Image (cartoon, rainbow, N blue to C red; front, top):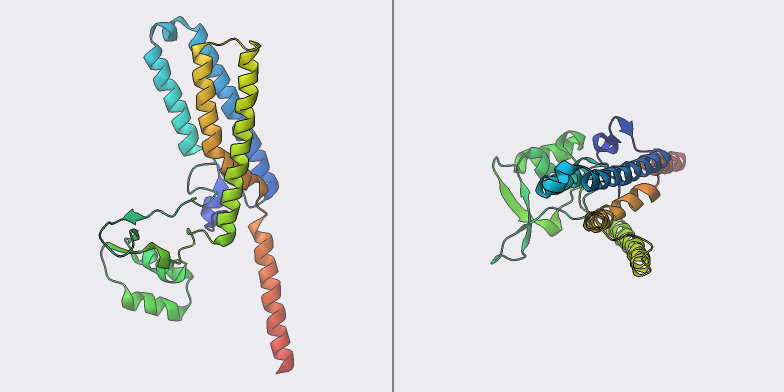
Length: 239
């Protein structure tokens, strides 16, 4: 479920192959978000400028939420693979989901699941022979791109989404009880910040859980390499 591109498994210069590092980054990211939202809420409630210009405060909050969504470790297509393959919907054609291929690497990933330079020589020749310069759309269900989720990854994504929904629901029930008993004063700024926080948690919660739980991909790669070498040695032994 982690991005197969090694360059995207780094965030702020930190190699996130290790699950321990990923967990530290997840905790620090959410801690920075909660502290930032709390300070922002306090500033909007206490500074006279924002009390007289609430629209500026709204834009400031929107900017903070946008930066967190687009620049944090949870951004779509970053450390975690995209949850959905980017497709084009073309009605009136057989099948309505297509992928856009724009260059040679796109064509290589579509046919063989890797960039041109990562393919064996025979497959490289095939890609070069069949490639045509231009922009083309092809059926998404035939794509072998590594960005497409396999069955295990779909199950991991669905389970993470379900668990995140459970946590958000529990938080909502807790807030409802606190507001009902009036243990928390209700202010418009706090309510708005709470709703924004719930939305951010619901949107980024599944990726947080995936980053927290996914094993180090290098361990799986080492295992596959050992198995491959062992199989080769067995074949040579029989020969």
